Image 1 (tube, rainbow, N blue to C red):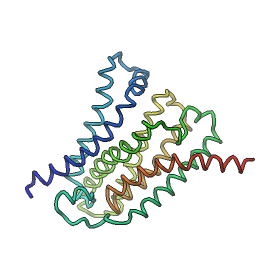
Image 2 (image 1 turned 180 degrees about the horizontal axis):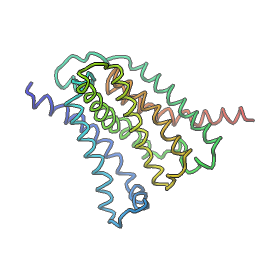
Image 3 (image 1 turned 135 degrees about the horizontal axis):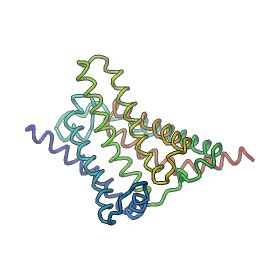
Image 4 (image 1 turned 60 degrees about the horizontal axis):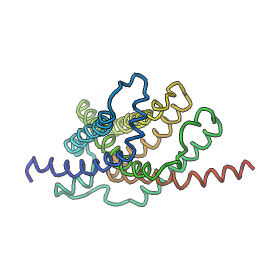
Length: 265
C-alpha cells in the first residue's frame, strides 16, 4: 500500500464517521444559534452565519484531529481497529473485551449519575439550571450518541491525546512511557471536561463555582476512563464506552432518583 493510501483511506473513513456527529447538530441548530447570540459580546450576525460557525468549527477540528490521529497514533503506540483494518494490518490489541468495556462504562456512568443526583440534593440552587442527565430530547440523544460517542472521541482521544503522547515520547526519547500515557490521558480528560463548560457560558453562570466544579469533575472522571480505554485497548472501545455512558445516564438516573426518594422517605 502506498504512503498516500495508508493515510487517505483511514482518514476518509474516520472523518466520515465523525461527520455523522456533525450532522446530528443540525436538528438542534436553532437552539444553538439562540444560545450563541446570547453570549456576552456576541456580534449581531445573521442566523446563517451563526449556523455556519456552529457547524464549521467542529468540522475543522474534526478533520484536523483525524489527520493527527491517522498520522501519529501508531507512532505513539496507540490503536484504532478501523485504522489497522484499512491498512491491511493485523488487528492486535483491542479486538476483544467489548463486554468488559460495557461493564466499565456502566459502572462509571452509574456512579456519575448517582453523584450528580447527590450534588443536586446538596446544592439545589446552584444546579437547578442544569438539566438532569435523563432530561434529554430525542434529538439530544442522537447528538450524545453520534457527536459524543464518535466525533468527540475522534477529536479528544484520537486527535489531542495522540498528539500529546507522541510529543511526550519525542521529547523524552521514548523514556517513561507509562507516565507519559497517564499525562496524556489526564490532560485530555481535563480538556474534554472543560469543553462542556460551554453549557455554563450559554446559561451565563460562569460565576457558579459549584456548577463549574460539577461539570469538570464528573466529565473529567469519564474522560479518564475513555482515555484509558484508548490507551489500553483501542479508540473504538473508547467510542463504545462514551456512547454507553449516555445510555446508562438515561436509564439509571430515574432509577437512582426513585431509590434516593425511597431512602429519604
